[in-house]
Length: 305
Image (tube, rainbow, N blue to C red; front, side, top):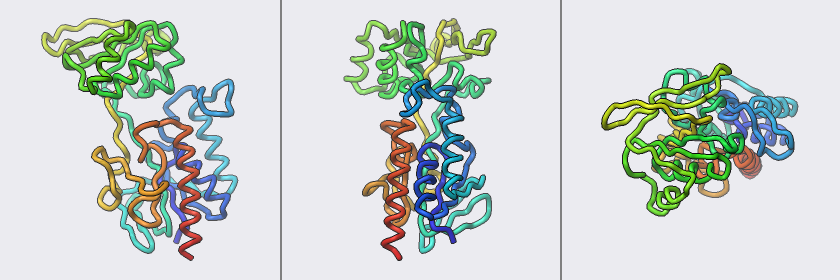
């Protein structure tokens, strides 16, 4: 019987692990298919407090992991397949059931990418899903955004602060974004829409960094090349909540709903980070929610005794 199980080892999960471990709860932390979360796919993080020179994403995660272990957190590789709420809560992890008094779900969200050959190897090398995280690395060079919704419009507008040119590539001839967002981004002189087009291939230089994209016209099938230094993919995220959706409340997109603080609709179950947050999606906000979930879980356990 565990006092607390934490699902996920991104910023939210690891911060929750640090706090619950320091509270002598000896948390069991489950590492899923992508241990360390989305930060492990980034090469440099410049907006996490305390690192004025920046820090590599994997290094930041490793430091947080070591800090949690120092205070007594235990780590286990495994994917949660099923969840049964109760007293205790039960999780099926790689075919084996484990029990816990409380649960913190910090399994994050996975960005949707285009799905082209070689794409995964280019993440962090000219392909990214976060303009807020990586936009500042591409000052005074052309970039492109793939997508047509509010997120794509917002990313494109944000990138005009840094890039010399922002191409907005969309498979249709109008944006799906709300009218106010669409009007605003299309009115920006730095933004050039590329209508009725999809990205057919990534083009790289000798160093393996993106130097451009090959785009395909969805109506004529004609292909052409576009010189850009980075491709910002903004076609949405998929919250990693599949194993929990039968029992935990989610919104229409599958994100866990926090009822009060980080609490879910099931007593003793808490949600933290990108698994519940589709607005901010930053390392520091995920860490803050991990802290809050740990405190909420600790107080819930104390009250339940």
